[in-house]
Length: 259
Image (cartoon, rainbow, N blue to C red):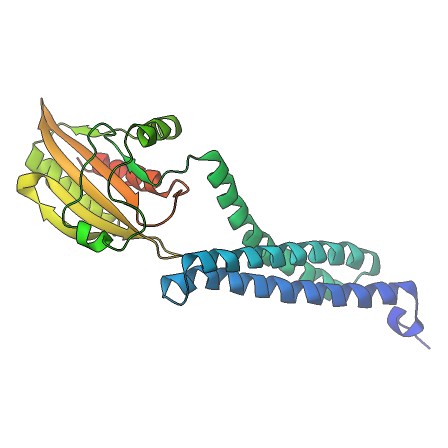
């Protein structure tokens, strides 16, 4: 007669059964955390709740993900002693699903602590480009469209010393068209394009939470070509976690590549 470890009551059977139950719990928690994480941002993007509630949901998802990851790791170790292959697979999946959910808010927390609490970035801190056509769209925005002055400029220079204007060896008209093409290639929604003023205004919406940020580009003639300045600012929030600086870098990279 053959006896399995489970049917004979041997320790291996207890380990297999216990690790399977723990791995199953870890997997359920990890899936729930992943679903809540996705919902946290898209719920705000589609107007179901405020961004503060979305952040609270994301925080709850991160807590679940931690529990799922710890449980999955424990189940994986436990399954290693009992040889439960199914438990090992569920534990690995729970770790793979849970760790990214926790890693995202952890990365945001790192950015919030390492970057200055500013949300208005410009290539010209002395005379930043100003909004005109976008002002009505910002009427109900919590953040002001007025530049923060020397304090914000000093914080920006320390955090983003590479954010500088682009000086192009082309005519202002050509630089304006190149800037407009760059904005469109990045998927920005063009609100205004006024060649005679050398001004382009646009908005850009983040993918997950759907935050709308505003951008203004200014093109001016200089000796030997044209100078392109831009400004990217958020409508809500104290810190942008580096989003506006990354947007300006992306624009300048595309602009220089096509000019």
